[in-house]
Length: 477
Image 1 (cartoon, rainbow, N blue to C red):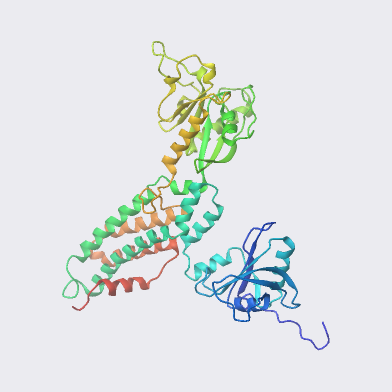
Image 2 (spheres, rainbow, N blue to C red):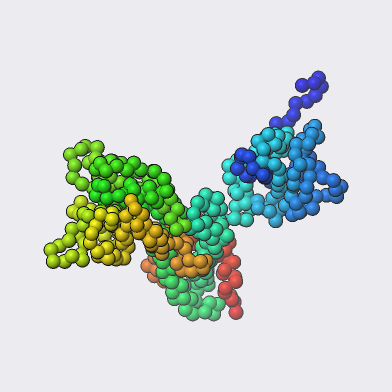
């Protein structure tokens, strides 16, 4: 430091409220985006962005410019800049985006240049989205939907995440909360004024009727077989069957690669092997299991037990059996009797693949039926029909309807949604169980129910009750 020069002041994070970060994945590409957000984003623009025009930068208009070092004036890159004036921005603050070439050296030089500005600091993970939430741009369901949209790997995941990020779930949760607050407002009016000249008759009965309908609506959301959560995290599919039926061959066929070792030796697969796949736009976690049979091999015994457990906890179970191992009761050549090792695990919901039809001389039609297919994984006979039928079966069970307002579209996509909605249903039940003499306690139960639904989206405001009270009631008529 030169004599007589004071050291640069050290500012706290609260004082450095303008943040910056690379908003695109690092690595070689055509374009990288560096985002700046905060009260001094426009100052960053004046220090780093050099344009030919002398007029102030025009908001929401992308302009070509030079990105320069704020201290030396060195040109770091030839790129584009766009300024978003708050609150009409993602974070509701002033936002500057620098679109630069995605070379490692260029990105590093621009980020280093930003670090020279004392009022700026690197953003914490998720801080841009958090500021959008705190500024009211997004609610919690939209934040979750945005993350799920970024992480989406299948068409089904994209569709459900896009609805959440777009605010569809927010609107449904907010409607629930608003209706609960409406019931609460009626009860609060009775507590404050009583039935008489100021409040019309039948208000209490109307509130109970509306609350009962709300409880039924919430229960319908809860009774969705966890479709939304399964679609987000992946359907757990377990392949099971006797040894050498073709389970590992099926896994390799679905994965289109040698994911599992295939040999004619029984007991080759001894532990559970999992592969994540996209089947018909549905995320599926496929588990290949050990062949089910009686054995004295200690390691194989453990594998067989794990296989049985995996079948019991799976969202979908697919049994693979060899056509040659299917027993036919005497006098009934068209019936199908499964091997004793798999028979206890097969239910009405089990999918069945009859494999090795090339080794069977009987009529293949005897194996046909709902959720049943006949193939030869070795010769590929029937595999296209199986894959198409299985994908359609998954789509029918889990895929979302194209209509965002459809009742078939699951509202719950995260476990915390289910917890809060279940709590709201319990509080409404408690309200319905109270008598008119305990109306104050009933009002408290409705208040808890509204808060429980509000926790889903992060919108909790006690003033809403007063707003509904003065909006919906004509007091002192």
